[in-house]
Length: 316
Image (cartoon, rainbow, N blue to C red; front, side, top):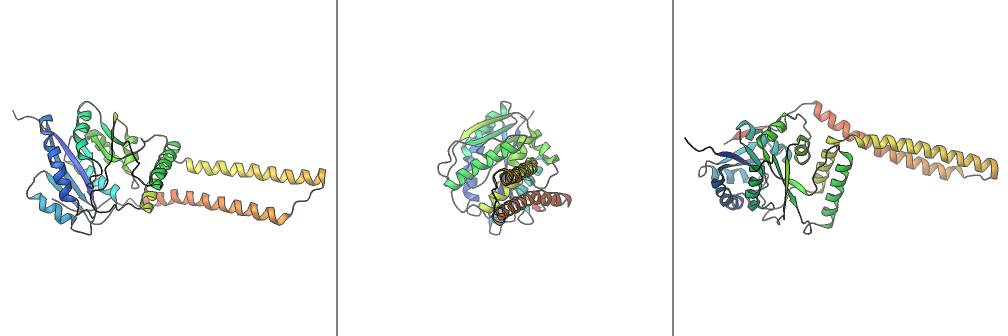
């Protein structure tokens, strides 16, 4: 009887990565070949998220030489989270036993894949790769990341591990549960912990980007953070309710102070100055509260349209 092979899909979302595709494949291939003695049959699944350069052409050139490379082309740029979802959906449809999510910029070292596979074979359903050093990041990026993890874990009912990105391994049963989730505003790094299952964390040191430039700027990273927080918590709305109560109590206390000072000490408070300060404060808080409510309402609107996460142009 032929030996059973455990099928492992390496999901690689790409957008304008023509400079990295060949280098990435050359780097990861020896690592994947080393998995054969462990009974692993790997397959590279590239998801081209509407690249505007020659990324798809570079990948297509590799398909003829290697049957273990697949290409999913989306009809336009839907975003990395949609591309990851497309890759996960494909892997579940093809019944791969496990999936690894990885970028092609080689910042996440492919040499860690065998360690991830060992942890998976030992019984872990999710293997997270945690960065142990962010010293090469800018001051802003380090501290904004710390702020994001702190806010998310303070506001959400389930926690996420700090300094863990998309680089991880998930078992088929975890991926299958992810395909059942219907929300359109999704962030995988917070959705996978929500699904649960037995998880193991492995430390690693992230490398510098090998070539090209990242497509994630401050605006996109901020949008990603807001998406993940508002998708998993309504505590921000409760916070504004609490702030309203505190402002009401403060206004009652301030009014009582003015009345008592007038009655017992004859002190008159100039009306226009205090009125301007209070009006400005209340107006600013109201605008901030409306912005928070608007974020939630906007996401409800987007979810209500029930549009697909992505549109596939071709699979080869």
